[in-house]
Length: 162
Length: 102
Image (cartoon, rainbow over all chains, first blue to last red; front, side):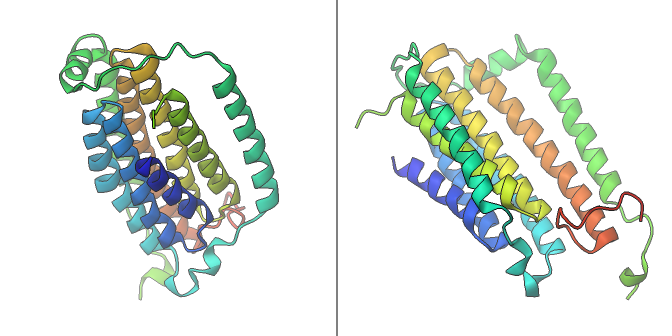
């Protein structure tokens, strides 16, 4: 309950804050809340990965990009919303549809005891899902090289020289 | 209070809605990326919830790990592109980036 409130409250700040830095920091609370929800769903390894990769990696990267690109002095105007009413309408329609599906469908849900899943996850990755796992590692390597090549400073432009 | 599958689905759906709203209203390219992260997290939460309550096993968690892998590489590539665009245009507002060539 608390975790859901943390997740959704931070998500609300991310969506509605006018300041992009507040949004980025609020994303931290959102990721932490989701990690807590993973623990409740007996996905302990995923919770650790969520904190390590998202909070430690992705969020730091996004913060760097925010600091490097937005001019700090006019940061409040850097974020003006366009078509809030339209977006709100579309989102409410989508949410109504999702809520209807979730409520009407008779899920064959059953309560399971919480148990650690890390060992089973490791076995699944090294037997049944071995090929996707290796492809995932190649994707990561390609993304890393691609990011370095893209972000490299090829030509110095005029305004960069001073 | 007894927490069931529908509660997790509700949280994930609202999170997805917030992410969609962020993607649609932001002009800042980094802001749009924040919305995409919210949407991906909502999908991952749904995977784990369904695995815990309905499917059993660990296949849902395997898929979530792949979502996290792809989200990380997507963020790295997108931010590299954003930096490069900012270098060329001095702006990352999606409505000002209308030139394809200089």
